Amino acid sequence: MKERLEALRKEALEQLQGVADAAALNDLRVQYLGKKGQLTEILRGMGGLSAEERPIIGQVGNDVRAAIEAVIGEKQEGFDRAATAHRLQAETIDVTLPGKSVNSGSVHPLNKVAQEIEDIFIGMGYTIAEGPEVETDFFNFEALNLPKNHPARDMQDSFYITDEILLRTHTSPVQIRTMKAMNGKTPVKVICPGKVYRRDDDDATHSFMFHQIEGLVIGPNIRMSDLKGTLLQFVQEMYGPQMQIRLRPSFFPFTEPSAEVDVTCAQCGGSGCRMCKHTGWIEILGCGMVHPKVLEHGGYDPKEVTGFAFGMGVERIALLKYDIDDIRHFYANDTKFLSQFAKL
Image (spheres, rainbow, N blue to C red):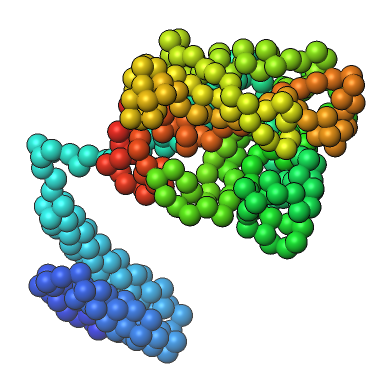
């Protein structure tokens, strides 16, 4: 048996010297050292040896195994080094080549303008209030002095889910929710940003979905002059200190008196041009003193407190700020258009 083991050692080492690749090396490892390999097959015959011969043959078997494993390990390391060298050569990177630039994004112009509006009013002591986009008819209409079948509802025809649930047509419901949450406490001084929905046909100045920011102030002795002063400060911070505003009488069911607010035309400075239809003014938002019925729905006594409210479309503010002629540019995801605002 000792002679067979020595012959196996010689044969295996000769075979290993000429092995060409890692796959062939593994085949030889299995052939000689595997569970069904030649070394294992020889050592199974140790059961027929005497007690004196077994340790001697066992030691020889271990020596043969160690010798074969040493050569296999050396050969495997050589193949591994060659594979690594080949991979490094194949994956060589020329560090002198120009790098691939990564396009960086920026804040969307509508978000940029909305944040600017919020910052202006936060600077005036307002807080931000938010509410659900899916509203009840009560909060969206009735609590705002728009009872069932009121003709003013036609101007805000919306997307109804049921007879009493709809996508909100303005952020005014947040004002009612805020008043109710205050439980009659004053002062109330909030702005309400968010998306709103109306059944408008998309064109250069309309969209079925747009962004709105409304404001609400409630407290003792709140006057129309407070409203005008607030809006003048907002306009001058948004568009520049040279801008002026004017208030024109209007109608909104939730305010009385109500007004449309015009701002000096930035294109002509108020002298008159095609953009402002030669009036020198451009309409920017609506406002008014909170209607007594709205105060009552919010849990306030109109004999004790008064308030004012205003609402503006973020898209319209952005159109005027950046002199854009079509609201649809904001929604088209055109990177050529959006990239103009990256550094503003």
